[in-house]
Length: 278
Length: 278
Image (cartoon, rainbow over all chains, first blue to last red; front, side, top):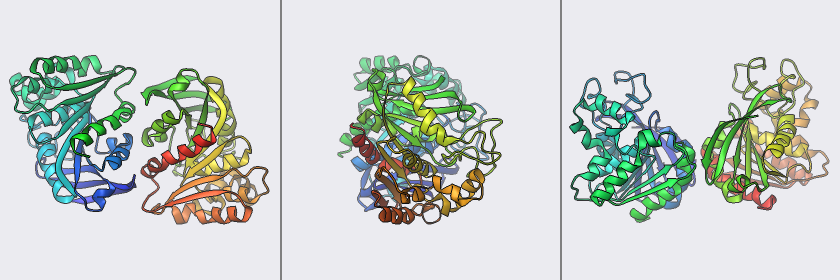
């Protein structure tokens, strides 16, 4: 594991690391913000951030001002890349399939299955690595944007007890029912829609569950993908029917961009810090 | 004048505009953040931000979280591009000369003189345009980073009474005495070093002045350009000798990046907001 970037930031340090991922079978980069308390060696809770289509580990750390909030609440923030990368890793020329578009699932179909195992990476390998190499406690939260909002919801719902809180900005809540999701799930999982249900927040909420972790979501009403790709009403209906707690905030005028994320990120950090005891 | 981007942000709106600049003889883009008060039509003071080498109007608005501070203090923030651009505008393959490297001066030498008049653009044409098209008062402040820190200091010092406050992050304070500056001033102004003095903050501070506007500067002590290009001691000595008020903050561990700018930008906004009566 090699540190390839480090910058002092809000009294802590923004770092980027590169490592060989056994799960993904390729080199991966991830960003980690260490607040001052972590630099002093104190164990801090960790917020995992999953980014959207076409992003890398860079987008969130350069555009969201997350460091100010992480410093205030003394949280470590980890932001992985959005897919396996590199030569020998399958890809597609479209921005919404292949490298940059891992959808945080474990693929079962050729040519994706050998490397596209982002769910195991973000839920297993990466937290184990973070908790071994940094002064991280085992108190975890997870959040994300767009495809990464889908990733955060699905990862939390698939791992009861693993995360203390979950939130999403403009998430894809029902990938089985929208164009981005249908394309990706068909490619990564094959045509059997029954197999898609394990990767769809709306379906996961509907199923009997031992844990009903509250879902915190913000959506911009000027989001250009709202009606076609995000369809929050599907999650509202599923949560209402299942009795799953949902806090859904609709924000008039806001679009799908990081200007929207940055505006409400402080509120999401409050949400996570509270659950993490900060 | 055409609006080419708009995003809701912290209760206000981040916009990007394109217009034909008579001063520069080319199309130019600039970013403007309008806080909620300005969207309601209330006249707000304006902070001008000048970016560094290789930047465009995008860097500051995507990386610094300026909108949070501008919203809190109800300030309009205007961020122009760093040089004239486009076909027919002289350029150089180096990142530190030509397009992206205007140095906020008025060039006198071929091939630069016809378009490279960034000082007149940022001090005259752009404020006039902003004060005509947006609900901007005539209360102005100016700030910048690196080459843009030089630009902010020089522009304020050359225009007594024009700005209520000035600040800079990691500025080039003595372009006549450092490699970036010597290269640019020789190209844009010719070999006569006497002509360079009008574009050098250290020289402008030394001269008799009707106004002694306090200079607020932050510098990172891990800045990779500190000793070779920034040389803050030259400005400290000149200010001490001339009795020019200077607040220079050295920040251990911080580098030249926007991680540094974002960390201390809130303090700079406090400084400007106070001077602007916000």
